[in-house]
Length: 535
Image 1: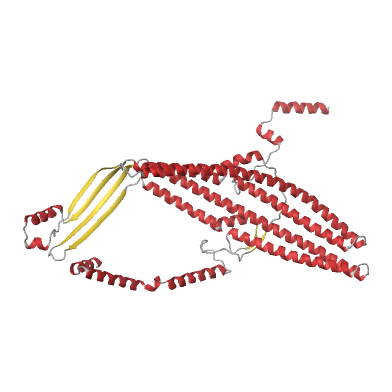
Image 2: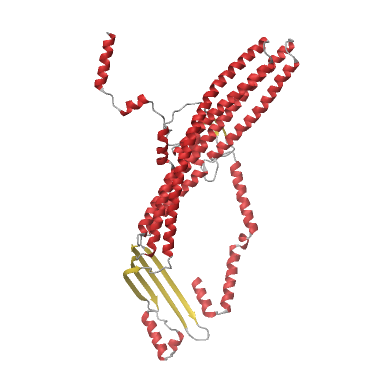
């Protein structure tokens, strides 16, 4: 119907009339589509309604397990451990989701690279109606063409594109691995930070218990006349000070949980409790193994190697621009009027014969002409204004830049490993010092409490001892947190966090046993000597 209306307009309206009709048709289309949809107010209303719906879904307590994880934030409840947190983060963390989506991009690039070696088929057609104003001559031409082309040689472009697609897929997987390791590091750091905050809350709670005991003991001694009102006030001030510290510690524990929930990618409406405690577990690191492991396992170094190979592929693709290209091409076409009718019309016009049929319809025959051709097509750009040379120079410069970037990453890796090893060693020493410090502070508080009950020391001595114990316990937990954080940073610097444990130092006796099988003759001689000694 549209073709008939358009043909009627072209035959009966010319010049300005056609422009007027087109403008009217455009107005009709806009009115039928709704002009209000394209206004700024309508767009603003739609966006605000979308935000309102998402806000209502995020604030709902009942989580729909059938909803897409890209649309809803899961609300957690109950007790979770570190393994649960890592599993949740790998599912719900948005950085991991974006990295997984990027894998689809690598698949698309592989398909695009394969397409350079695949045949291409193009169908084209045209229908032209010519109306010359002032002349009683009208003509209509129709053409339909099918073009098929198979590349035979593209100057090395196909091989470079396929290799680049494979390398890009490898690079994307390493980027996903890098993202997962970063998320694992973030979750583990936030988890032990939340454990630290909870331990500091426990320290404040224990200090409050001690302060309450001191207040009760002071009031009791005041009733019996063995203490002054000043000592009671000192004990109450200490209790109030501990209450303030407890409030700050509880607030920091809540903030630590919010940071953990954000790293997990779940809703802030979640109410979870963390299992586990912040404990000191000493390890002995095989420092000689750290740097070789990092050179082979760190994702950023593997990505740097992939970038160098991609740069080499870019050079090959740039060099293939001005090389010859060979195609196998087939063309099939149908046209109306046919070529013979066109020649007849041209002959009649050239001879001056102007009969009624020729003046009314030039090429108005009903026959369709059919043509087809098959052969080899060679394309060889002889001169492109040095554009190819410029692309090659730029690609080689990019290659050099990637090599320098990889060297910088290697230096940075060595620096990170050295610093984390030193940091781990110092933090372990600090933990050992704090262990003895806590033991001494606990004994000092016990002696002060006994002495206060017996009247040999004042309440100020008890308060000072309790304050020292609280500080020693806080320092110990901070030292353990620092020590575990150093282990996490070292594992991340090696590029094996969440994949492999830290390389531990094996004792020499175990190393010799693992490397050398036991000598049976030597064992028999040792047993014989033992029996002789017994006799």
